[in-house]
Amino acid sequence: MEYVSLIKQALKTKDPVKRMELIAAFALSTLASNSSRLSKPFNPLLCETYELSKPELGFEFLAEQVSHHPPISAFYARDRSSGGSAEDEFEFYGNIEPRIKFWGRSLEDTPISNFTLHLKPFNEKYIWQGISCSVHNLYMGKMYISLNGTMNIKCVGSDLQTEIKFAGASKSGPDTMLYGEIIQG
Image (cartoon, rainbow, N blue to C red; front, side, top):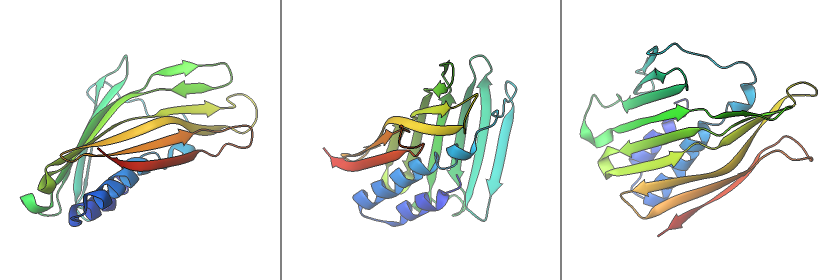
């Protein structure tokens, strides 16, 4: 939710392609800090919740650990900048279930995760899933994270979708490359 301003901008534009661009940028922003997460992740207890209210940014966020083995988290966020009026509201919700594989010198997380962003004024729902993430050089060398796979963002309410392809790290370096396009139809 660090880049909730992208959702706020999407709520202000009438152009559905521009909205899709902004929502795609928001979906990508959820991956922005992955490279700095090279430590053991937070491991909440079953039914433990995390609540965050940011009136200055105009949203409320709630997450809960709904299963411990396998670990599954669910979350819900909503717009609070307009005092609940229907003209400037969104809901963002989903679940995340990591699926970890150990490959000797690396770990791969292929999560089962679903994200939905509902822009109420346009009656549009943007739906996407998580992508694969790998941590390399667990024992020797500098650890780094790479993102792999394809993120498809579909807009229910229009005929637009975005396809973003991630090409993870290679022998030329740990940087993740990505490219995408907005498709109509």
